[in-house]
Length: 135
Image 1 (cartoon, helix red, strand yellow):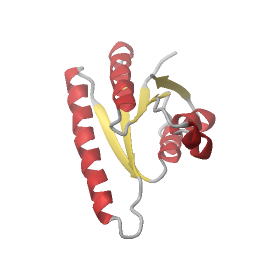
Image 2: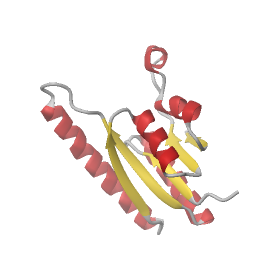
Image 3: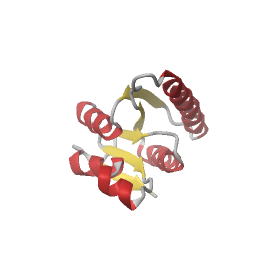
């Protein structure tokens, strides 16, 4: 099995950082190309300040990801999107013909889990390619 293209869902969380670190090591061994996808939520009415802060955080986290990739000597492509993270990851995985999606696991409360499910769970259910969830 070859892993030419790896997609990493990246939100700057500790789980996402672990997923990216794992994907970078895997890419080094397999000679894979990595794309990271950072998804932000669209701003709601009168929430421009919160949206601006979220975008600043994403830019900061993407810089961290690029520095980590440079340390590992792996080139990465960075993509950003706005909307539902699971939907955007699934769409890019399908359209980009990725071989693997790597995600971090984030714990939700039981209530949050039952109300919304997790991004990783939704991606597992609907992804067109293999999924690796890093704890």
